Image 1 (tube, rainbow, N blue to C red):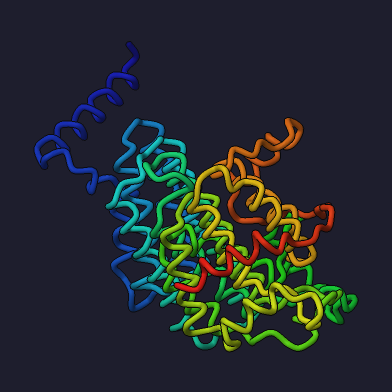
Image 2 (cartoon, rainbow, N blue to C red):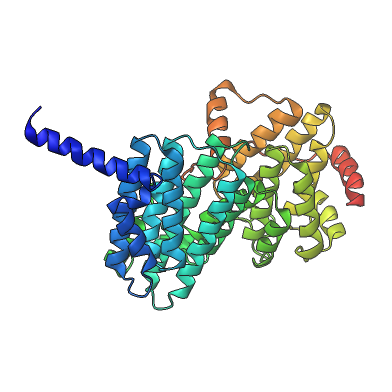
Length: 423
């Protein structure tokens, strides 16, 4: 052994002995000391200081993963991210560390526990509070950070599905994502805006798109469809009803028989929500949502809607709320009512094919038929069905849905209407 190597060995041994004497705390590490100093100095915090803290935290997190100290790595990413939000208000910098946190949770196969869900809720609250405190932030930057948080919540939900105990992901994370999608929809362009032509500021438009996938729909309607899907899966039908209540009532054009425009957004989102709940076998919340909608939101008389649904001469399109009622009543019966379910779909086909992303709606109705009535989809559709049900959000799934139009069986419909009288 050379003299230099011997000296180096003695130096390392001396440092190790010093750490052992102090209890072996990693706080003596110079990187950790510098990181703690930066986080403690809230009076002189600026963007460059926060970015330095980010780099130090990332290096320590990767070091923890490499050395097998998974708990230390994930805890550090969480605590530093929370500190950057709560004490420093550096949302842009913190968003990068939150993305790293989810990557590490997946990489280290960290289980989704109640404690981690609580932490995710705390990060979401701190993120939103930090955005609200910065009143001087430019609108474009606020929108960009909102999109980054959307990606973070989606990733966190996916992690909870893979490494948690709840199918489709934790309910609390579904609620966080659903609420955020709804908030984002208020700032997003409408489908009409997107079809109206090129933006007058092409550079700003490109900046708005940079945080989305190439084929991702960023319209307000797409975000609201994703919102109601996640709110349905959160098992909070009352919150879902509150959001639907904020939307305008149908216009005469939207409820006219044979209308060529899409159905009223409020009606189509109700139908989507009920179908999602029925597809995942949660008829309890589907009924709660429907009762809340009929009592607090639907302005038209329920008896009038029932009679109109059966009429072919009143010039009014079939009611979405009545269709949803009939679907739920059918699902609550035996598998022998499968032909009635198929008849319902055919009778309402003109509305279902005009709802946003009709292929997703088709996946839900097909799943319902398979679960409750043992109606098997064609073999060629099985993989597509399972993929769509696995996504449960509708993002990026386009295309159309065919369907043969069909009339109503008056006797079967009348019997169903009589059973609905008690609702």
